[in-house]
Length: 54
Image: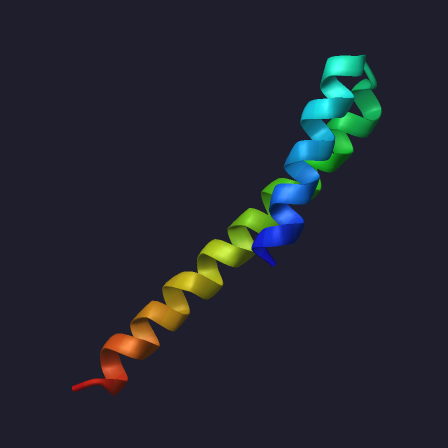
């Protein structure tokens, strides 16, 4: 999931450099969504790991 986030961020940066506003905004939006999904999954797995090791 993190790979997809990084890929869309890179696409957004490249598109922004070349001035493709719509493409950059779309890729940045997808990158944001994937980042927050990854962040939630990371926190959940961290909590699960802490609770099961006791």
